[in-house]
Image 1 (cartoon, helix red, strand yellow):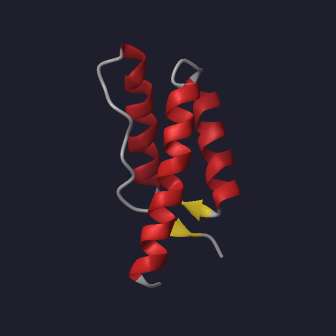
Image 2 (image 1 turned 90 degrees about the vertical axis):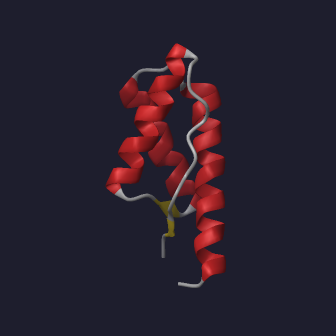
Image 3 (image 1 turned 90 degrees about the horizontal axis):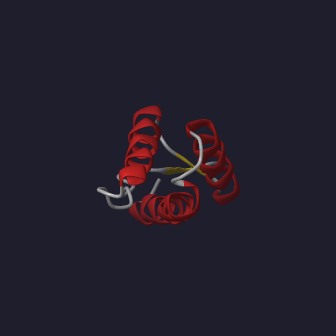
Length: 79
């Protein structure tokens, strides 16, 4: 995988995270996870289990309005 492909995957995943964060932060945890997974599938990118867990926890932290939108650190394109 090239650096350009990695960067494109991260950018696509970040768009999904931004959308889920802005519209779903007040939703139940299971709903947030489902929306994140759905968006990532539509964007044809995936996150590692650790990255997904971290992002969901940070989105959950937005409920307290003390956190900012999580930043995707790594993602991979789905073949």
